[in-house]
Length: 332
Ligand code: A3P
Image 1 (spheres, protein in one colour):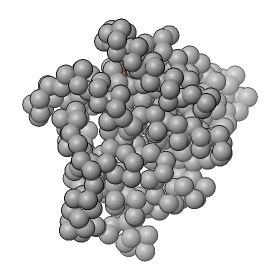
Image 2 (image 1 turned 45 degrees about the vertical axis):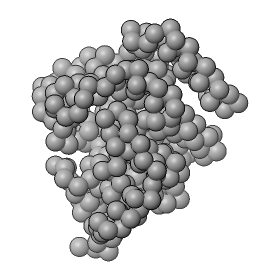
Image 3 (image 1 turned 135 degrees about the vertical axis):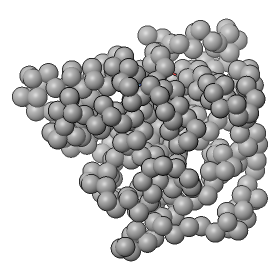
Image 4 (image 1 turned 120 degrees about the vertical axis):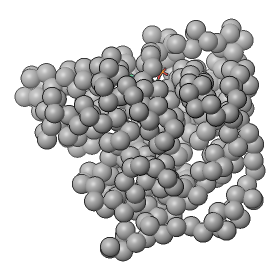
């Protein structure tokens, strides 16, 4: 075992976790006991894994890390990034995504790697992953481990308009509660009030998004900022951007052979949702694999928001994004 592995394996003592936990402001929303840690909300039970990730992860310059709030399209971006990076190794009909859920090929650092009881490779396997390692996180920018911020590793940030993100999250939570019988079925009004007050996992939403947005402007070679709605509108343009950003641009020959369209089609929700591997089974003990693929549309919030909810969120969005140059498309 080398030094890096040894460091990654170090476990934070339960006493220390408890001490930090007890000093943090707490709240409850979406059926979760949460803590306000370094400016964002986390499940209380996730503090240990986040501390481990922050203290022990050592980024490689070649790492490619997807970041984004839950339900903003991270699974889609995982499929796309995995396929783009490995396109010379696997032709489409041998793509490992035919046999693995995207979450199993691009590990989430705080949950899959530093989580306590999950089925994926443990930290000691991080060293064994070939470069470029494809990883992901939900953490905001500022609390990321120092080596992610200071090394030459690259971050691909995905975001989505806050109304569709909320709607997708609502469906994810309700399907989880229904299937697992854990907790009470949440009311959309309560979740929405919390969300507008900045209470959502890894949120507040706007602070998360705006910080990455600013970093992408300050350091365009470090952070690529992507919007779900843009990917839906013009996937070819954004696949080219992703490929260039990770240093693997499509060649004129690939373009003429239709490689970009093949990747778009393969990773489309219509195709990937129907793969046997994504239809049954669970991720991380609890989450149904199929719950990561639902409608995949822009503007679905219109089926769930009352006019008052839409007005409240639109006003909030204007207030929070004023002067940032960032905007979201709300309808297709
Ligand atoms: P909906 O619930 O609106 O359908 P995440 O992967 O970050 O958890 O986000 C999940 C959302 O992305 C869900 O949105 C899901 O349907 C959508 N999604 C998953 N795979 C997709 C794909 N290949 N193309 C477009 N959207 C996809």
